Image (cartoon, rainbow over the protein chains, first blue to last red):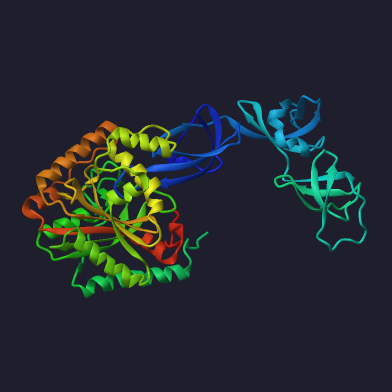
Length: 189
Length: 308
């Protein structure tokens, strides 16, 4: 596998650190006019999600991590594993609870999601930034109450619970931001 | 994209600053010298990589050796305002090509030169606070360690408690560089701070002397503005013998590290042998100075074309 020197570190680059695949978040060059140069690097451990800082002497290298993002279709969950399929090769992969994590509550069958693979195995699942999902449970809607700022919880078809305005009713299809869990609006039917 | 990386308003400030800097020295009868950017020789400094001009020599990492040759040839106090070049340096505060102001004052020591710099800063930014601190005080206040007495093991232990380092540092000077840049600089606070009397491991081209506590210190100073390094000055080392020793020691270190090993600049040493007059000199990063004056965080915002 290739390796990268500190001067090549860019945000988003995937590298191996202490045996774990990491993504570089930020790389700051620190150099006294007369003295040793350092790179202060912020990295995200792709297994644990933890972000931390480590300082390198300039010129040190890290091995590239075999991490790729692949667009795949979510098929179904059997309770233990979530199953995904490559839409062109029909190759199938399964991911466990720990891998799917929070993404589980946004996954609708047949939606295209991003699977991050490490050495060919699923490492993380990222739903699209915006999804459209139907409301399956919420308090009765208050017709005409579109101007007020009040909110109530609504349960979506995938199990996610989001805060919605009072006028939303069961059967509405909502646009939601999966990164923040925020309600964006009602989708056009 | 043909557009400049700096706004035209910032470039106008830049033009004004260059004019103010020149006016400051012309008013004091310090002679401007326009020394070459390309030289046959370069520095042996283990932490600098020069840019090579194939078949000719090197782009100069600073005008220092040319300026000292002028001083040895009998010139009065001089200043240079122009480009300097360092390979492998790029970031929010670094570019491989940058503008440097360097000046030498005959008969000054480091403290007299710091006073003159303070006058310059007061002209450029009348309301900015200016403080003076010894390296010892600045270091000890943040880290609780005496930088002169601390052993390599003490410094390594201090680093281990504060910084996650990828691989250990094995010499005292690098440990001091790391602790100062990561822990002390951010605590220097707003305004301008002169830090003087450096540990002997960090002497570079400065003379050695004893401080009030009887410790051997390098008569070197650094200037920080809002925690960013801006300038580095010395009460200059004049002896050719000592200088040659430091060059040879650098060359051995560079060989051990697998770096290129440039020839020693013999004409510079010959100038020192003839005799460099007693003087103090300082080099200041003009782009960074402008960053401080304009309160911007990225050097690209003050350089007309920062991206290659």
